[in-house]
Length: 257
Image 1 (cartoon, rainbow, N blue to C red):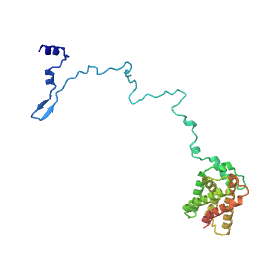
Image 2 (image 1 turned 30 degrees about the vertical axis):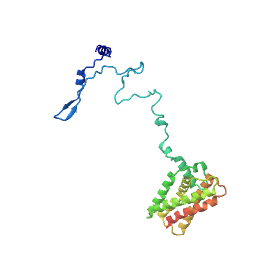
Image 3 (image 1 turned 120 degrees about the vertical axis):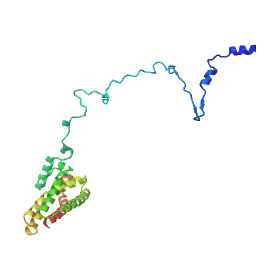
Image 4 (image 1 turned 180 degrees about the vertical axis):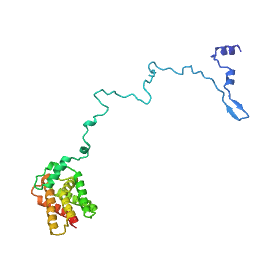
């Protein structure tokens, strides 16, 4: 026994006792039939670990305002938030590709068949003038009691597709569909004069036939002249004027009959 007491004295001493075991035990309530865990008070003031110096940085307080974020940069007086001001932007008509100066020059070129056409202007895809001329042609037909808007736009679309294929086969440089539609639409202007004559008198007599033939030659001459100058097709104006005359002849038939 003396040796056992010496071994017990040399054993590691701790603060664990039997009373602590009773405090951590589970209590069973027979009336509810559930096991309850007693609440154990924990001291949060104890340090759970050690952080290396310099790892934990103090949090900076927020100095901004709510719903007003701080801008990333502050523009100077000469620098604006936008890349350029509204004064530097081009006009709306220029952005849409509508140039009244070029429209007027193309109209004068059509009205003067013997005038030399400017190829740089005629290569532009401008459909504002042709749309206005098509509407005016349909409106003058409407004054004579002919509702032919569908025929006007349908024949124009088919004629533009046919001339587009033909000119791409004949020319070395090629042409776009918009350019063909623009030229054929501008050259429809003399046909508006023919339909306007139909409002004043009948075109089914001899005078009407002569006027219709002259208008067809006028339209085909202007269109072929523009195509030749724009596509550099020297010596091929008659070859281009013939299909143009067929197309405008259909419009003349609509105006006469």
